[in-house]
Length: 525
Ligand code: GLN
Image (cartoon, rainbow, N blue to C red):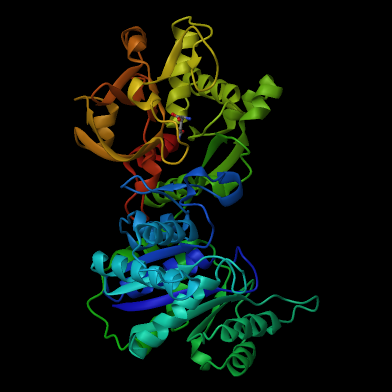
């Protein structure tokens, strides 16, 4: 097994996740089988209980794990499916060590960060890497070097470095090269952060320097000299037009050759998909505008998978999808502003929790339905479509979800089996579940099959009691998992498709999610 450890310095938000994913991709492009692990030094067991408005989207894996959004980047860049063990948090490590201590596994020893916590970390990494069957495992250490929380993880990496053969482990450090007021590229923050790293006993093999503009050769030389790396190991990671161009940039900077040399790897036959993707991206010649009506909608990071899924669908159609993130509360405060939606070729309502903004979303869905504008509803976006339909087509004026209000018509309700769950961590219907699709439906046409498996993250469901009434008025449930409704569509509408699951999590560049592709096609007319 070859390990590539990616650390970060100077500040957070440099795109360390994209860098890690891109390093994986350039090596996958050389024919290697690559997997990835994200270390999150927070105490939470997983990202399930964390606010997406603080940490960005909670990504859901097929096994139902609720994880950091970087795992979404790995899945998309590497076209792989990961499991919960690929996201290691401080909370998980301590929980295991404390449980072992209580069981007496440490035979009366004093349990300490070194060696007990660090051993647990190393064991987890090696176990996951081995189980994946990959040639190369990328390990991204979250946070910034020097953070108190990351210390045990960096110490574990130091130990791995001395335990593994030199040709089996490489360190890549991601830093920032800011420009001063004269526009000069400054290397001091990089020097300091490498110094910090070295004080922990770690020496980077390569430095990926983020910068607004390409790093000059003399800036590279300076970094090489001060940080003790060869000059060809200093990689200019300047802003790219799109994240999917980052691997190409790193390839051009010679990073894959450098890493293969360091890790004594000889390239195998390369898969052509990435070149094909680059070709499609450069052929884009049209644009379509989509409104995503959400909550605190200015924070695109909380809907990153939706953003990417729309992009993937757009690339396939040769079109750039221009997304406007619209705050649903705007429509509540000022209902006449709903007419601004006429500018869009498609309207999307994403998933969400809690009542905030939901009435505005209902207005947007009504607008899409009545004005024959393509509509894609995801999870809460399907529940609200059912609510809107019940209110305005069935005349159940106060139809609602029991999550959102006390109502005599809970068209969306909690099913008895879900009710028993009280603890807030992982209490939802999570992960990949199958649905059976109705023959001849839009759903079946979109998926080209009568079965699908997509990822879920929700507690509430369409209330079976209301299904006959709703279907009699023209909204059809065309995807089902037993008594759970998975898809609601309106035949005769230009495009009205909504799902209880989240298709965005399985979308890949070059392999767009079927509902997203159909939605963008419908938006293009
Ligand atoms: N809040 C809704 C539920 O729990 C929808 C969840 C979602 O959109 N992910 O069922």
